[in-house]
Structures are given as structure tokens and as C-alpha cells.
Image 1 (tube, rainbow, N blue to C red):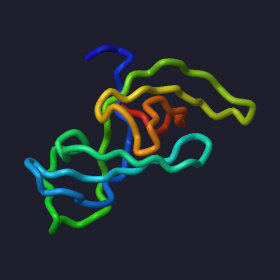
Image 2 (image 1 turned 90 degrees about the horizontal axis):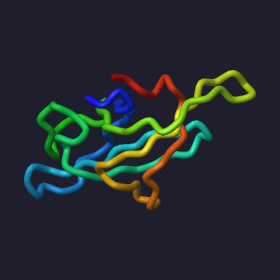
Image 3 (image 1 turned 135 degrees about the vertical axis):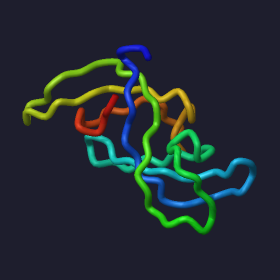
Image 4 (image 1 turned 180 degrees about the vertical axis):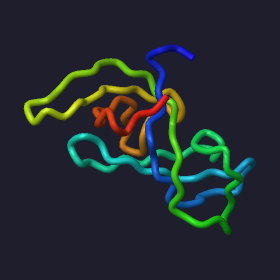
Length: 105
């Protein structure tokens, strides 16, 4: 794994399509408090088997590349990341600034 590759924590909030292998909608909140929505096949976000009868929300993650790290005026460690799959959020974004605590290896 590339050292700049991390996992961004997301909440899998709903099952949206049963096309193989099943599609889900996920959410996360960025460092500015804005909610972003991602949609893709459930194996992108979790190793759990999910379908329309699964219980939601569930924890998940999405692979991302770290572009920059810094500390803001309030002392928070922030990270600019880009996600490669899905390529963008429902808002058309693929780069986000998140708290470092939202990332894991």
C-alpha cells in the first residue's frame, strides 16, 4: 500500500440498488461540518455482506490518498484527501478536507 493511501471513515446509511453486488449510500462530514454523500457498490466500503434487509447505519470506509496535512488555528490536525472510487461525491467533489482522526491505515 502506498504510504499516502489511507481509509476515510464513512457511515453506510442505506441500500439503494440491488444491481449486482448491491449499491449503498454513505455519508461523512468534512472539517467544515459539511455532509458529503458517496454511492457505490457495497464492497467498496465494507467487507460485510449487505442488502436491503441489513441494519443501517453501519461503519465503513473508503480508500483515499493524502495530499496534504497541516494544523489549523484551532489546533486541529487537518488532511486534504482525494478519493479514487467512487470518483466523486453526489456534489461532484473528489477532494475533501477532513480531520486526521477520520483516517486510518
